[in-house]
Image 1 (cartoon, chains in turn blue, green, yellow, cyan):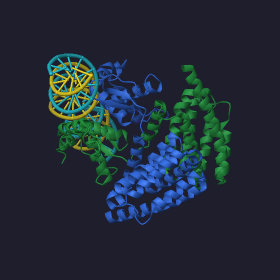
Image 2 (cartoon, rainbow over the protein chains, first blue to last red):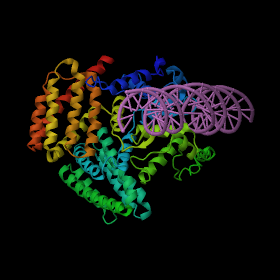
Image 3 (cartoon, rainbow over the protein chains, first blue to last red):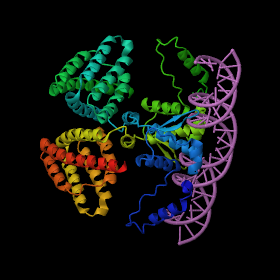
Image 4 (cartoon, each protein chain N blue to C red):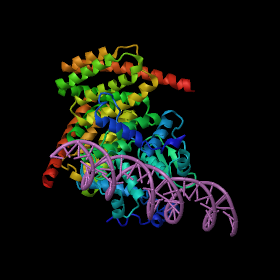
Length: 267
Length: 267
DNA sequence: ACCATTAAATGATCAGACCAATACACAAGG
DNA sequence: CCTTGTGTATTGGTCTGATCATTTAATGGT
């Protein structure tokens, strides 16, 4: 079925482009000519199979060599398709006998990675990013207050305990990891996977910034967090929100200030 | 500088694994042995260069052949790295003289794609997804009410006008596109790029579902939207929210019902 | 039953080649 | 001078075929 994959469309596309260039048929709506690359076609076929239910999580795809022959493309092409889907979290590639490409359930990492990329490339400003963090956080708190269970609150408090144990400057990295985990645990209390994913997307990149600009050591974060969890336990969403908002306001102000300082230093 | 890229770590990792297997040092915290693949190393080097400001949007990387030689890896390896970063929206690959790999500003598509993947693979439930949509929508409305300008409201109304023009069943696809555009325009009114990104992430996958289960033709969406925009213009966030919530409630109920029906039919 | 060795399968990488599209230089013709 | 066509070099896209590294299962000895 894949035999037509590598047939050349060059003559046809050239014709279309020339036609447009002449300007005669300008009013006729041509779709932008975009020759799909072979590996994209392979990607699409696999994704389509998943959408239509012909493939689902846990299924194993044919080995690269076999699939290449079946689709009448080279192994390198199958490889690029597999790589693309692996990065997307759709496939997992395992070596060895009984290895191969296995369909996964998806992965959150591409999302957090993309947010990080957008931040470091300037496609997303730090202030917009932080405001979105605040907005999401508000909704998370509402849900967590309504649905959080004792186990969730316990996990949050354990996290705070561990944070307080790490006081030396050398443990900044571990503290950062715990901070990020705190937000993850909070999102988990919403019992909503999608909210967890979105929160992860706007939380994970924090680590990169904290590593760059350092932490605000002039403030005891643990105290604020304890008050916050207490409000959560009391199902007092407005107070919990107020506590968190004041914390985030301080954090974001600190980050903006330090980032601006770093930018000044660079120029 | 990259000369050590292809040196084999196999002996070292094997040693570590054997040591662990013996169980003697179980209490010592080993990091999980994860032999990084060559193309990942290349990816990381490029991303690091971006984070450190040595590369920024608009810069052009060396050609595949040159970079392969510089890093002492094969062209295929550079290629997989480039492909990975291209899919991530970090690079754009262009053929021809003066072509090559150009650093971009990032792209939102990986995020929406990942959400779609998670939905079709079962890593994210439809109900969780829709609830997150509602939560995000609430925040978007707040911001849009506060910051939306006349041009934004105008764009929304134009969108509604065009939706009303399309009434035949054959134009379902176009109507869907307009529906998605409506949410994008609404997000744009927040003047916050991050909110736009998050909204896109939870809006885009709608198209896939609507195409599958069809639209609810028993209800006039345009009317509800007109009321909604009127509330926006009046800066009346609570009423705007109420209008949108009732609409989404209906839409989501319809989707859950039809999806369940489709699932029944399949089994 | 247990352990070490071997073998086969499979992804990871490499090497070298050719194809296809693109942009630029340059010549031809108006 | 401007336009138009024609190379032509460059670069990503694909192919072929090979070797390396890792994993699992089979094998076989103790």
